[in-house]
Amino acid sequence: MLSCLNKKEFLTRIKNNGFYPEFIIDCGFGMETKGLFENFPNSKKVIIEPIVEAIPFMEDFCKNNSNSKFYNIALSDFIGDIEITYRPGITGSSIHRGEITNSEKRKVETSTLDQMIKVNDLKGLGLLKLDVEGHEWRVLQGAKNSLNIFEVIIIEISMWPKENEPDVKTFFEYSDFFYQNNYVLYDILELGYRKIDSALQQFDAVFIKKDSILRKTKKNEN
Image (cartoon, rainbow, N blue to C red; front, side, top):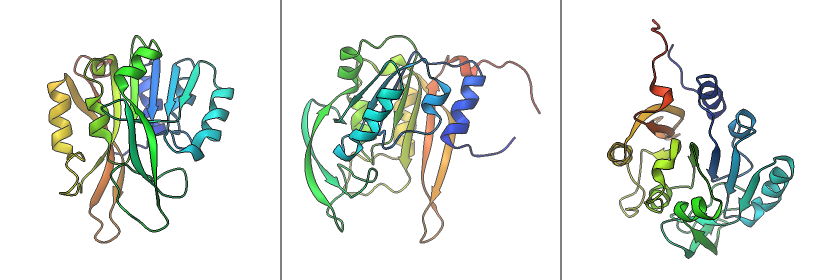
C-alpha cells in the first residue's frame, strides 16, 4: 500500500500495531496535535508551547485530560531564556525567524528535554513530537542523557534550511544523528510543497529505535 499518512492516521496505525507509550512529550503543542492524545488517553502527557496565547488551550487540555501537565516555555539545549520572533496567532513563531511583517520580539524561558524527563519523573516507553519551527536540532542536543528513553520520535524537517541558520539541519544530518543514536527512519508524514515551484519543502519524519516492536514483522504482505 502506497500512501502518505497524516499524523492522526499514523498514530492510529502504530497503536493498532502494538505500540502504546507510557508517556508523551508534545513540544510545539499549538492548539493540540490531532490524534496524539485520542489514541493514547492513558499515557502521561507533558505539553510545551512558548507562546502565551497558547496558555488557554493548554489549560483547557489539562482540565480535560488526566495525568497531564503543561509548560509555557521553549525547549532548547540550555536552561535560561532566549529571544523568539512572535507572529500573531498560535503557530508560526520561531527562534530562528528574523523580522517579518506584524511580528515582535519576545524573551521566553528555556529548558531541556533532560530536565523535563527529570522533573516529571518520566519512565518507560516514550513518544516525542517535535515541531518547533527550525529549533528541533537544538532541542535534541538538550537530550544527551535521555534521548534513548523515546521509542518513537516525530520531527518536522525542512528541505530548505538557510545558510545563515546553522542550527536548522538537513534531513541527511538528522538521519545520521538518529542512526548514530540507535534509531532508524520508519515513516514520512504530511508532505508540504513550496508554492513557487511545487518542490518538496517540509515533512514530518518518524524515527524509531532499531529494536522497536514496530519493526517486528508479523506477517508477509504483498
